[in-house]
Image 1 (cartoon, rainbow, N blue to C red):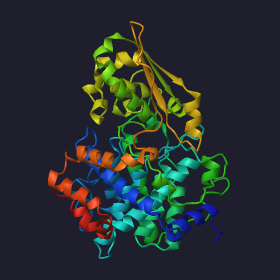
Image 2 (cartoon, helix red, strand yellow):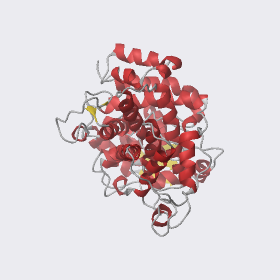
Image 3 (cartoon, one colour):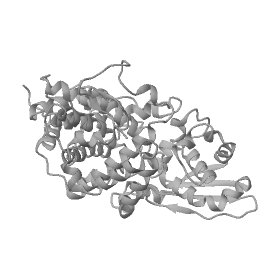
Image 4 (tube, helix red, strand yellow):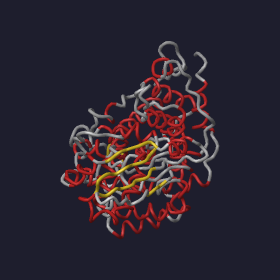
Length: 466
């Protein structure tokens, strides 16, 4: 066989023989799983998601199938990965990174594969799941940092990184050796990427809520094929003219920096359900609500100061036909924060989303780039996501600028992470689990040694009933 791509070897080495995750990364992985479970529970009764859940053929029974938290479903690993990851991602409330993407999209794949192995007699612990999460987050996040697949110049969805990470890490969880892990990676690369069009008007739609789940489940599919003996390919990245770099990147090499635990250590928790680049503007708008909520009709102009990335991705005017368009519209996010003093997933859906006050505020809003915010966004020593909001009234008075440089879930504000994530989990999970179950789960997550030693099957049993 021809010599493998250097990047393919690097990814395989990392998954099979990479450095042990740092203690900080393992601690954060626990928080990420707790956060993901809260998002999942909150999405169970969300509009539009019901029809895409469950087996593809209604009534299908899978003996010893993989469990989907919060539901009674027991499905094949591919379909279980899709269900779990779709629920985690649906509310646009799941964790993110400083360069975008949602690495928790891969959690459904890891839980499904671990449960699949465990139900066939192997002892898979939650610590192994956390280690797999660190590696999955790292691959996805480093790819997002290295190459902007979802830039207009490329036009692909960033979930390619989720698919790639889930393929290799899932193959390892399923018991794959180095050859099988490499084969899984190579098939994921050969699969290419999906278009970013479903995240942008006029095509914005609910697919953006399940695109990560689709990528995760594709990763599981390639992992299962590889472990079953399906062949791989030595040069999926560099083959000319048919490889990923030639076809997708116009020949630009995809070279990744050393892989470790940095993405997990620096993950960003979402404490407001909106596109990440709008999170600081949302916080500023919510902070202004007590000063403007009773004077909405007197507002003459709203000015949002932000960075270039927010302007490129979420500065949108005109009709917003659905929730998927609204939670990626900076003007809608700011208007909702000013009107309601909070932003929940319900604010993106009718009837709240059709409140005429929101449309009026959108119509008098200006979004301007603040050069210092753009510099801070791209400066690796700062890594901010800054925005400021200022409101002017018809009587000539102004509120002054309310500025937020880093969102509440940012690593810069990590000291607040545990109570914030705990509160978020409780608020979302009460829709699915009793107070006793929630308390038991929180207690478990706060005892790392006990949780890490627990078998995955025992853990999932706590989440599929109540």
